[in-house]
Length: 332
Image (tube, rainbow, N blue to C red; front, side, top):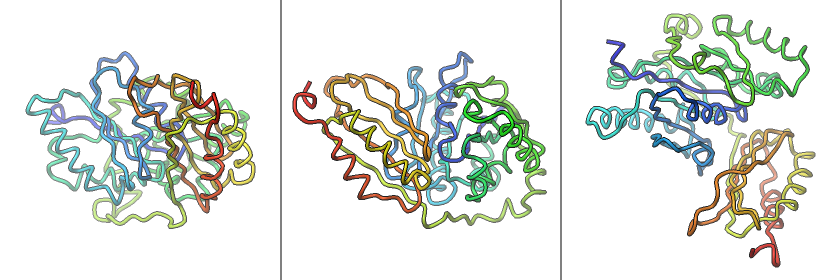
């Protein structure tokens, strides 16, 4: 019977660990699989959908305004049901599902969905929980955030990212720590978000009995809460931004508030540039790259999502608005 079930991979990892980068690699790779993607963001507006490559007719469903493991969990059940129904009716073709959770998700309630909901269990097979771990920030994140520990503890496969940014001894120390936390999960390293897909798909790695040993209440405990002091907000601006001015402002702001800025990312409309700029950061690390060109007639709107603790929201908004391009640069 399992041969007829749709395999599902849960892609998790703390904020900024590289989940969307790995998901893009999965979507672009020449593997012949047709993939439906369900992605969840902690915030009122989705950004990741615009960061994903969509050139093969992928079915991508966004879930915003909450975390997939609690407030929008009912939406997950509904979306999975709708996908399965469309597949049976022949109106949608896909071979597998990848669920990209928000970085603040506890994977346990997400995985629980596949065992406590009868309809979901009749259509889907939880293949594996793949957890990305940011080698730069993980040691601190696992001290400060229960979710980061849960993501490692529930992993069937752990993918280390950003190992090129830390000394080798630190990487070895982190690997040893992860092995102590979860000795059953194999650990591999990603290079610029790329891994051997045979190491993350079709693992048949989720072991319910092993999870019940870790968390005996796994099938019955549905409560999950986040820290109240973690919040998010979205900056929107339709006027073009001056890239140099904006980068100078953000460079200064992260020097002071970097530890509070757990994650920030966005799509930017930069004056004089026909392509959108993809901007991402975690704490003190940030960078930008070109994305897809703006289409004729498309609203060129900058959108940035900030997630953090005690963020200087008004100061951020003021500085970003002062980055609006003026004069000839604003109207190429």
